[in-house]
Image (cartoon, rainbow, N blue to C red; front, side, top):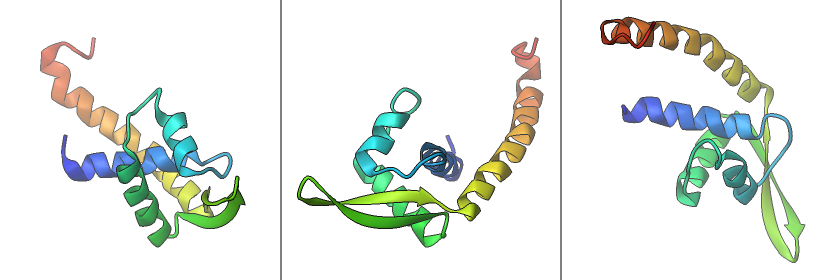
Amino acid sequence: MDIQLKRGLLDICVLAAIKDEESYGYKIIKDMKPYIEMSESTLYTILKRLESAELLTVRSAEHCGRLRKYYKITQAGLSRIEDFKKDWKEIIAIYRFVTKEDGENE
């Protein structure tokens, strides 16, 4: 898979994981596990990128004597998910065109 496409899809998956409530790294990985495997190092790289793009915010809070970072989606992050949903319709149409000779569209 094209690395840029995969990167964009993983970003959307992480945003979707925190769409309804703030969360922290381990829980995000756990919530995504039935759908996609992701290493902690990959997740934290994505979280930093999304924070820099102001698609999520971060706060630290003590949990069991340690600081834990909690991530919350921003309005811009929610908008990015909605944009993805619209774009996905176009991607599906392209997929159908590409695979039409394979008989996969029937």
